[in-house]
Length: 486
Image (tube, rainbow, N blue to C red; front, top):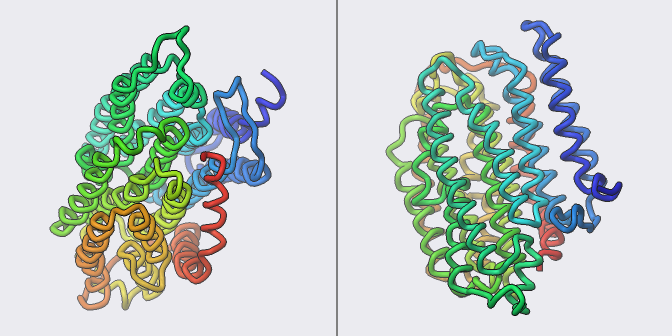
């Protein structure tokens, strides 16, 4: 291990070390002062974020090429760490209000984030597996964090069982890819496909294709793509709401980070073979996510199916990953949309937390009635988030979807783009239903005024509108981040 190796994974080292120290320090912090634990967690996240920003633009490998620092990892590191800060901000008041104020919450968030950072930098399938476990195991605990509430315990066990099941697909796929190429490193897999080595046997394309398909299935569970989405509504509804927001953004982005890194870097030769599968996966995910969201009356379940639908929109860009003409633009569009969805989603979850009461009350869409009169700014922010998720102006969601649709059309997948447009129109029904309830129905919703929570939804609403007016800089950053992958 060299100094260069340590510097390459410095944000991960800082995060893990800070989490371990925080776990010990929290023992000496009284229960009524757990705000100090939250503050220390935010300080650690801010420090790791500063290091990640300082590393932007660097290109280096570490640990024999198993870990890669490049524009792609730097872009995602910033997204993950910012998501962590958002989670701490929306969780502090929520945990106190729900009598869940335990310091280990923040430690588990830090450990899960370190797995996400490692996932973004993984350049070897073994590291991908380690990162997957590191990000997933704390999430299993966090989903059941609201014990002894039966819904939360049920969410934790469902997420654990199906997460372990999905991991089995990933591990089996990795073993088949190793059997087909003799390598687990992404660079080695590319070399084995392009220049087969007779010393280790002939390259086996069928075995490689099956292995890649199993890896795709495993990570489809993580990103909640249809038909591997069945865990999402129950887990999102039962888990504490800040954890739900963190999973909806962080876990989804980490899953796409692994898919993009593996398939774009090591398996572009399979792009043509996987097009029908990816096309069907994207179309099914968009259709099922949006259609099944229509009858939902619980806002957490509605946003869960919304999360499924948005995974389908991102998969629409992934269909073209093997085309060298469109691939870079497709991946940049996917990264841009991940940021778009992260900002909008965290804002929406912050509004949900502002209305949520103990024992799961305040989570029906009908509970939003009268919010436009009682809290006009909060209702206006939720309106912005609903419009952005629909893809309507003047929001960042419109710009993100335009980039995705343009990518699909450039790749010749006009039918898929049409499905994306039609499902966006369908989504307007259930998103705008929330807006209509807030402004057109009378009620007296109880809301919480918490400084950090209010700051979160306020900044998210402002960013959703302002960035939609000047999206070029963000897309240029995303485009620069993917150049080294190709």
